[in-house]
Image (tube, rainbow, N blue to C red; front, side, top):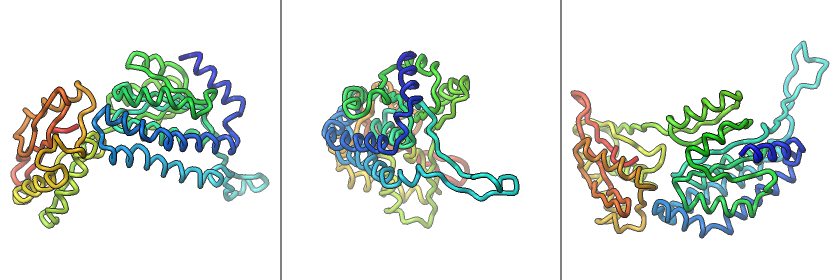
Length: 335
């Protein structure tokens, strides 16, 4: 790990990543990776979490290509010095803002969108002229293997590296000095990342998951709400950091909303979602057992069937009352 960091830092100090032509060439190489490895990406994400091909193509490939195109179209403008107004003290000076790369960047990606959430920060890091170490999630094993084996065939290995690591290896990786760290994941791990970064005064970007309430007023269109909540909740089998975690509504709205949700779920995934090609699976056994345990914490109103072998958890929704006048339609049975 240390030798890798020394090598990348030496490359960055050489100035190799700074010219616009070099950055463009590496970004275009990422575009070829997405095009040429499209089928491999779809197969890897399907193997890791049963991700439907449309979901995988939209979130892992199409959104990344959009980010890539936007970056290529604007890179020349972004790299230019930005001239600013001068005050009395700086009247005799040239005053401008120059965007310089940080240096050697570490990207630690999560498992729920294992291509998208390493590739988008990588695009930004390359565009800014940095060298990069990418650490894919070990939880999504097939995608991790794909990234580790294939990315080096497209990018300059003197400037960009993929590290496969578990918890212990990642802890040792964080002991090295980086100039910027991107992390997407849980608040618990985010604290560890930030603590390690603080030892070197390394700036960080933390994209952390949390709870997402969805408030439904009595004046809402129930069918519209049901379709939107069902789509947001069950996209990627609920394994999305901004998926609705619970619904807050009146008792009267809950009585209307529950049958509407049943109807929306049936419309999206059929009468037997387990057989639906559009319904994914939980990524690992540990996550499956955690979610299954949540089924015992309330009353399951819709679905809730489980199959540990397939890591399948049915389109579960629960309900309960929170306070004297408000009902809480809980959606905690998916992550």
